[in-house]
Image (tube, rainbow, N blue to C red; front, top):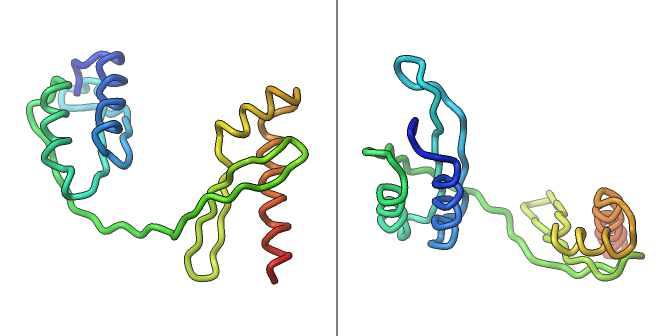
Length: 139
């Protein structure tokens, strides 16, 4: 899209996510005649596609869409509360075969960092360490 404002794009992203899009992203691109533009990409479950397409056509200046089907691999996820020196932090645990990943929840970490006067990175690090210590204790 080469003629949609940043405000319209931000609103469109919020609307798409509220309507069930799994992810929404923008990429700066150049179109024909070297016009700068924005590429909008939306990932959704198939049953939401029609509704999201209508939203895109309604809320943006685009007059056409390119549609692709893709397979999606999703690691099994669950939320874990972990104890840290900054309090309980919720962490997303993702597993697939022997692969295990941890992602501390931003809002919990942000709140703890502000309450304790430490960096956000330190809270993230302590939450991840607590996860790996718990993992080692399971073995």
